[in-house]
Amino acid sequence: MALEALLIEDSKTQAAQIKDTLESMGLRVRVAYDGPDGLREASENPPALIVLDVKLPTMDGFQVCRRLKRNPATQDIPVIMLTEKADPKATMSGLRAGADDYIPKDIFAAEHLINTLQELGIL
Amino acid sequence: MSRPKGPYVMQPPVMSVQIEDSMDVMIVRDTVRQAGSLLGFSPANRAQLASAAATLAELVLKTGDSEALYLNGVMQGSKTGLQVSVDAPWLENVSSTNVLIALRSKLGDLVDEILLEGEKPPTIFMIMWLNDVRSTAETNQVNSDEYPSDQ
Image (cartoon, rainbow over all chains, first blue to last red):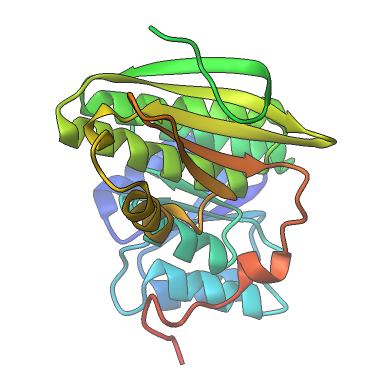
């Protein structure tokens, strides 16, 4: 049975694109469109992987990641931040929040995502 | 294209990217991740290296120059690392102390060492060591100064 990923992404267009990419890697994908929904989904039904955007309404991706890593039910789930905020400060904030990788949304994003998922043993 | 140089013993991989336009910044990011992967850096460390190298590439673009950014493995004793370097002719008459303060302020969290060597032209070096113990606590610490707290 395919492993399940939880995608937390507020843009429906981008969510659909990333969902397609993850599904093409053989993963099943659930989508949450904001941080609180994502935290609830992750806690109630822990996925094998969380792909997390930074710019989210209500609660940004850094806050979501910190909460995931503080919650015993979700702290061991790999979190990959996939984002347009690629500057050094944002990168360090994501990694300090506990993200397992921080990948800018550029033309190489899918390739980097595959490499990291292979290394994490998810693919 | 000149050869890569640096203060430490070099080893493969040796890669370079000519920085000429904004697309090259993405290529730098990708190439750094590949080099980091070959040397065994974790995805999180590769993200740090890629961000530092991309920032250096953006700096080259802002000067209007076209420079080659070099990536190569380095060794010091039993330590292995990845070095990123680029010639910086636009810094020839600038105080190296001031340059290092600025670079370390912007990129110091991302890499282990930032050096400026030579004069005509000076070369910027950034190094991340693989064998250093990288504290999980440091990586995972909550940094509430940078982004709003979720408390």
